[in-house]
Image 1 (cartoon, rainbow over the protein chains, first blue to last red):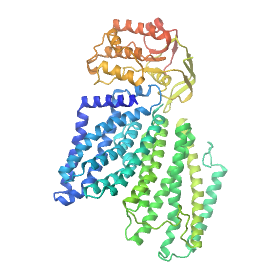
Image 2: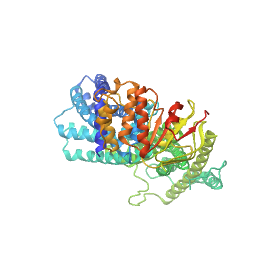
Image 3: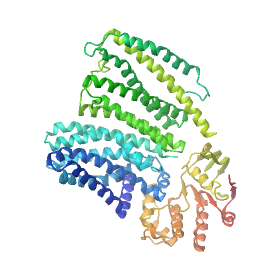
Image 4: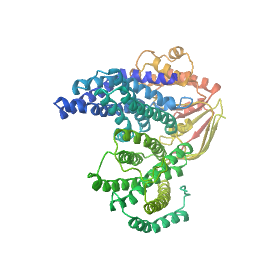
Length: 221
Length: 228
Length: 189
């Protein structure tokens, strides 16, 4: 467990010292929202209607970019072997990389939420519930993205393969998150949004468990 | 029933499955065309005798891929990977057929080729997952890594079926009620229609077994050639 | 017995890197792998570490193995101190990183991007000494080291053989003769 935190903190430190990486991911996200807003606007009603969908598709792209980076850190420096030669099971490598991404993704996606509130008139009145949706949905994306990024780490052409493999698997996350966000924006009572949270929670638990168990089997020589 | 040794030609069991399947296929077709028309749908119902068995084989095949992928990950025996590959390939073909027959049925019934109906959507998602499975296999040169990566997709992809299904079901609903409700065991169908459907299910399952064994053998030959 | 290779063969695509190689290593032994470029020394070391699987044959290993690639692999944006601290944490080992850095004459707070290749090699040796593996797998450890560094390398190897086994791939026959109990020659394919 300590190793998981250590790996997440080390990667975070590397990422912060690099800066260019995170900034370009955020800039990509901003430009994407901006172009989508131009394409769908300028009237308020269609923008408001499209906001949850645009937000979650953009977040899916953001998480594939970050997941690729999480392992590119190791592949570029040739240090993946060092992690694989540590004693004991390698589940912690997956969990550490996942934690690293969450630590980056959560603040970034909160920023993304603000951006879509500004550009798409997404109402932020129920911020705590929105943040919960954000956390559960982003965790769902990251759980699968981290696993596939590790699997594809040494492959050329991973930038195209990763979204392809990821997007078909995370359809339930997209549907549930978008629905929950729509529900919150339209002011539905929380009891009607809660089933979507449950679905997200089930997805997160299933995929984190399965990925952590499969990761060592797939990565070891 | 699926694991083959590594012979250079199909063994007896493969021929039995293939032969029986192909032999009985016309009979199944006859039963389907001789079955009475449906009260509501009329003659249109006959596409069901093709649609349900192809979809069944698709799901069965992906389930087999899931099982053999797990086996491969734990045992690292290339034979398991070959069965997983063969089954996924046959599954993809039958799943494609199921999607097409579903669309052909949807057009006169609902007036559109495509609706976002739960089972249809889940099937389409699954189709995309296994398309990714083959693109991934094509992208990896190292045979060991290729097998492992494919096995991981085979496992994670199938885990997605129930979750996808639930999410799409809540998201939106409209479909023909299931002909055979597995949860309650109730059957809403004329005996003659049921007989024809079950017969076709049997025929398609035999064909699936035969094709998969055959494909696994071809995969073994390919690997032997790659290694030589 | 620390390491045993039983009729190990490895192939990439169509080409065999080596075939039917057998070898065993006890604690306290140093084995040198000799051979021209492309003869499979690095591949063999990675096989011994468990980072690669043999196409045929079996690799039996006891204890922890660590592999030192050439050139050594580090995260450029960390300092030497940070790198060693994280490595100790990942391996769950306690060690005196400060003494190690002083001994190898390395600045603790300089990002590794500013290190020369000789300094990186020294840091790699310091790292191995701190992590104390049972099996040391070194790929051309002598390259990029100056006179002083070479002396350190010889010292480190003497310390390593006290309670561990060492396999080193090298082009340096003088080094092999000075430290190795045995040499294994790999021919070009």
